[in-house]
Image (cartoon, rainbow, N blue to C red; front, side):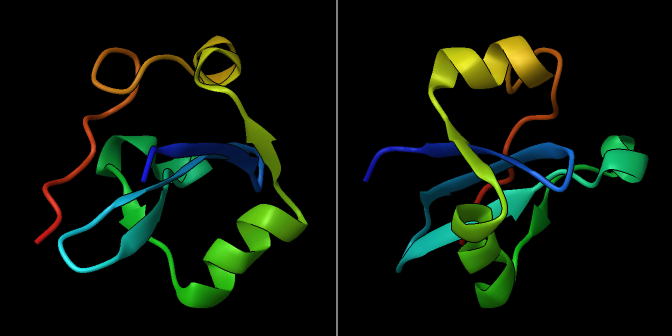
Length: 77
């Protein structure tokens, strides 16, 4: 599965491939330096309901580039 990019709760969110399944991650707006947080199943659903799906380039324009302006995604085990 490809990475899916979202604007959610005024911040960046992604869905990426995990080891056994897809995992949703979001970057808390007020705690960006703390890194990505694994989303609950309900939060991932909300990415689609209340969030906006973005292309990779739209995501980068809005929030920056993962691994550059934004923290690297965690290793998912």
